[in-house]
View 1 (cartoon, rainbow, N blue to C red):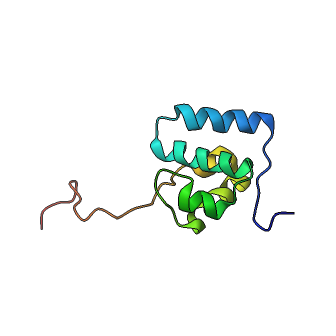
View 2: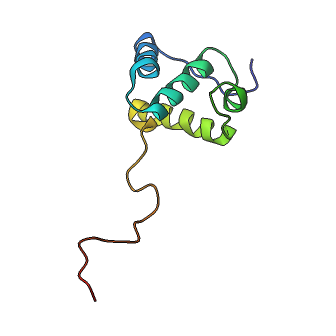
Length: 96
């Protein structure tokens, strides 16, 4: 039994991830789908994070992708609204 987390995919889930890996319009979705497919093929998530992607990632990041996939499916791989820096300039604000 492996000492790392694995991922079991149904045929439909594998087809969906392969389609997203090959055809998603957003690069981060292609990367996340590729990472999940490698984990499903038996590669440890920490190895995928360090050397299995185009750029090395923190293993905790890949584990977060895995957790979100299990909890929410493909919707869990999307970047959520509200992320990022709050704008410092509001064009609609009146001048003082």
